[in-house]
Amino acid sequence: MAHRSRLAGFIIDCKRGSLASSADFWSQALGLEVQDYDEGGEGRYAPLADGPGGLHIEVQKVAHPSRVHLDIETDDIEAEVTRLEKLGAKRIEFVRERWWVMEAPSGHRFCVVPMPKQSARARPNVWK
Image (tube, rainbow, N blue to C red; front, side):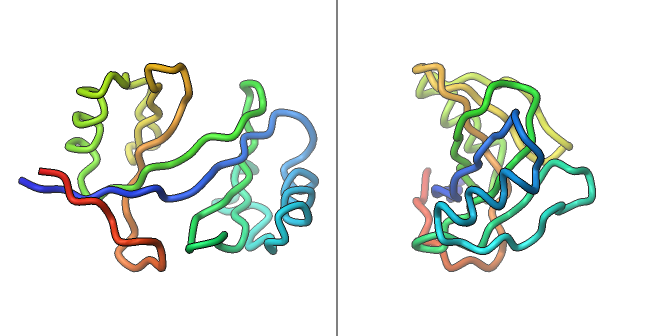
């Protein structure tokens, strides 16, 4: 059965500083308003206004070294993760029973997340 996926956006992982100060810096650096300084009330996520092409951009408080990672969104998590494994990626961690943290053969971490029903992002790829 076919499934769809596409680039969802970029997550700015910040170890140092507070979530609010990190969100303020990236908001000003990118010219995108902070939408919520504490989405979910856990002190971990601060989404910014959508970036170019409707890309999701958010600041995330993390315990690992600061980095930027991308999210791939899909309408079928298991099918997309399996497709990416065939390309050489590996599963690292299933988070909040909603998405997979994965690692590319190059060592870069990325996430496979659920696709929202409504989105201004580009048309997704269809995989068979």
